[in-house]
Structure formats: C-alpha cells, structure tokens
Length: 387
Image (cartoon, rainbow, N blue to C red; front, side, top):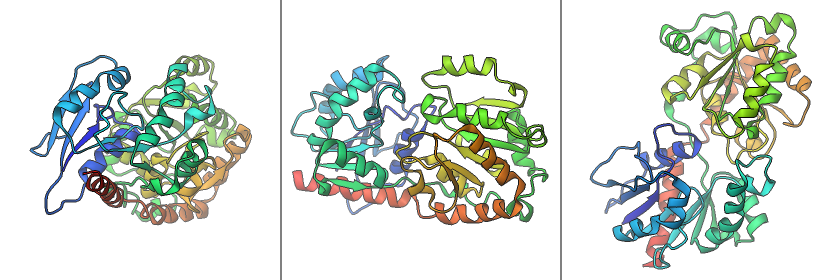
C-alpha cells in the first residue's frame, strides 16, 4: 500500500506534531506486504529517505498556502492508495478518489484568539476543519479529551473517531536511577554526561524546568510570576529554565522579561534537541507545566518517564495523561498558588520521591509502538474498504 503523508511538520526543529509523525513512521509495523510512504512538504524533510520512504518537496516559502491550494497536484502525481493528513486540514482540491485519514491534535481554534497564533489561523481552521473531518473516512485523535472536543464541535459519528494516544521513547526512562536522585536530593551533582549538557546550555543545578514553545497558550507568565514570588531561600537557590523555541506572541513575552525582577535567575535555552532534553529532565528538581490547553501534553509524559517530579495544569488532556503521578493546579489559579506548590515540592523529599516513582509507571501506559500500531490498523482498514 502506498501512503501519502502530510510531512510539513518534519523540519529540522521538531515540536510535538513533528515528533508524533516521526515516531509513528519509525514504529510503523511491518506486514506480509510492507507499506511504502511518500512524504509531502514545502521544506526539506528531516526524516530518513529509504526505499519505502520517499520525499516530495516543493520548495515553496509558505507551508499552509502551498498545502491548501497547490499540494494536490504533487500528491495526485504520486498516486497514493490513501492520504494521511497529519495536521487535520486537507488540500482543498485533493481528488475525491483518494481515501483520507486525518489526525486532529486539538480544537484550540474554538477558544478564540487568546490561544490561536493569528486571525488567519483561527479562520482557516474554523472554516476548513469541519470539512476535513467530514471528508475523512476515519479521524485519529491523540486523547479522549480531543475525541470529546471533536464530537462536541463537529457532530461526527463516534464510530468514525479512533483514539491513538502519543507515546514516549524508551530513552526517557531510567534517567534518575541514582538512589539520591530517586529520593529527591536537591544538592546532588549531576552525572558527568548530564553536567556537560547543562554547561553547554548554561544551566546551573538545582533548577526548575519548563518545556514547550514560548507562546501565550503555555501560560508562562504564571510560571514566571510564581518563581518571582518564591521565598528568598528558594529563589536564590533555584534557576528557572525555559526550554523551547519562540512562538507567536514573543514580542509581548520579551517586553515582560525586560522588567522581570528575577532575570538573573532565568535561563531561556531556545530550542533543545531531544537528546539534550532528556538530560534536562534527568537533572531538573521539578518540571512545571501551567498550560491553558493541550491536546495531549507530550512534555508532561516525557518528564514523568524521566522520573522528574511534575506540577501540571489540570486543564484539557493533562489529568488524563498524568493520572495520579503529578501535582495539579488550575491554570487560572493566581501565581501565589503555583508558587506555594513549587515550595511544597521543594521542601518535601518524601513528595519528590513519591512523584519520581509514580511518573515512570504512568508514562509506561503510553508507547509509540501502540500509537503506530493502531494508526497502521486504521489506515490499512480504510484503504482496504475504499479499494
């Protein structure tokens, strides 16, 4: 079977959706007749090219306009058996003869402009996503929360939706096996390999970690204000590290940081590759994630797998993903409450030890093998039915 894939997210700097597509392709199960893939994108694709993994790159400057209005020509010329729309939307003139499976990661556009990057983004998704989910033979969603969102907003039959939770790489597990780390010793020096990564990113232990694209949806101002409200004995001891590339709304964040009182204790690393990110989770005193909205929340699962104590927002999918392995707060709670939660975790070695042990057990319920296996089943069954 020849599978066409929207691969616009497989650039050099992968975020959550790019990680999802790359890992599903990496863990795609074999069969009696192996599947082949053609990856379509406007930009160079950072994924191995093989006999069964071909690249089709247009070289267009703007990804979404190319995808919506022009990509259908390239896709049609390669004659795929089925098209997998990995970012929910479909090329507007994709031939009806091609069966389609779409993945919906979230419905954030339904929340208005507070969390959407632009008016055109919001308008595009409000107008075109209902058509895409209607056109699709099956809709993959990354959590039960998103499944409920799709049912509520688009009224599609429940039988059309398949929940395929994301996974976490095995390399994230076992990073804090040292007894002192497992007991939450904040004074422990990191292992040499980890210390080298921290030094390269100008990070000083102990530190509080936040991970994700720097954009308003991540509620970073609450985390920054919570850190600034820490009692002096903790504020002087910790560094606050935010790992992620700048996103939309970065000008507002930059203006806020110019007057941030604890700028000397703040480290913005920019984009961090996965191999280094594992070391950050391994060495962090805790991971704090106050996001207003997540379709899944991959950084939370990665932190749990690494045994890093997690304080997370209770919004959207995050309780579903973290289970009982995290401390939860309402993302709309005042920064004082988030600050008190940080102090609670910092002061209690017993709580840190409990969270560190519970995290990997919870994270093991999510695997890329399961995600890819179910995705392959759905894609193959749709292709077979439509033939």
